[in-house]
Length: 157
Image (tube, rainbow, N blue to C red; front, side, top):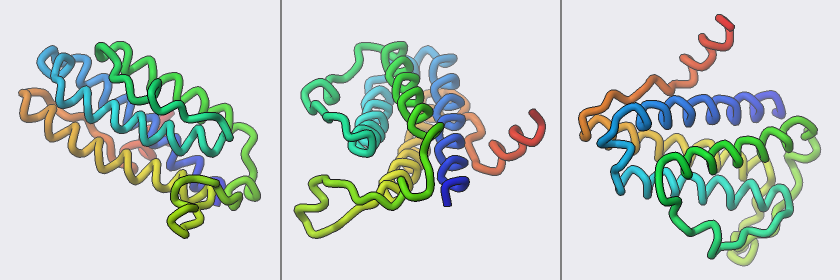
């Protein structure tokens, strides 16, 4: 299971980077408030679960502050990827089954680290699609972000 989780996270990083680069290359998209809000939402959701996994505090008032521009958003994505990468470098199978204490616990839902990571990856995938649609509406060209494209790139590297 760990190897699949590692692949999903690495694909997420790659797809996010492709999307951010495409947005950065299209001035109308780089300045679009709706895209900024969606990208920030992706970050907040990812960081909530990641910080919970790392047993760090999620300081809502800090995390909810919308970055001022695309460069700041890109920096936050990079910081988040660095934190994930550090965790991923020493994670093991048993780490994946640890139960997280979150607001879901209060609802009677116990979420494991594995399930939280799947939530991050699937949630991000859905919102990347929305961002790609918005990028196209602004006249840009969405990048390839499919998992199989990432696999092809890995085999060619």
